[in-house]
Image 1: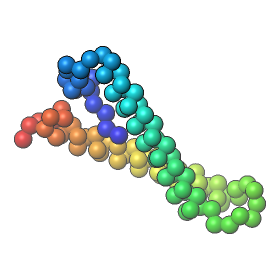
Image 2 (image 1 turned 180 degrees about the vertical axis):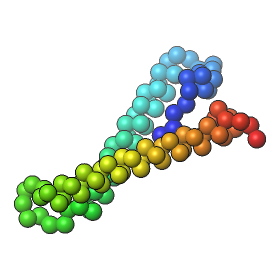
Image 3 (image 1 turned 60 degrees about the vertical axis):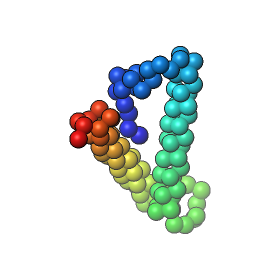
Image 4 (image 1 turned 120 degrees about the vertical axis):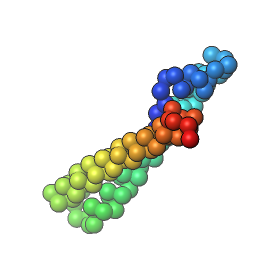
Length: 101
């Protein structure tokens, strides 16, 4: 998720009461938590589907463990890269801290 600078957030909340600001911050935190849970669930589903092919034992074998490790690392790196890309695009948009065009 893209983040905004403190100044941008203060400008957006100009004229909003302190109580309303607190409600908005709680809503934002809840949205971020839901996004993180969704990302985690997607990671688990994708890596499980790609790496676990049989249920021979209760534990993971070496191949499955290595696959899960590689899969999670790739997923986390890709998510971070996508977040950085979206943030840089957001900074370039007029009204989002970027130059007006």
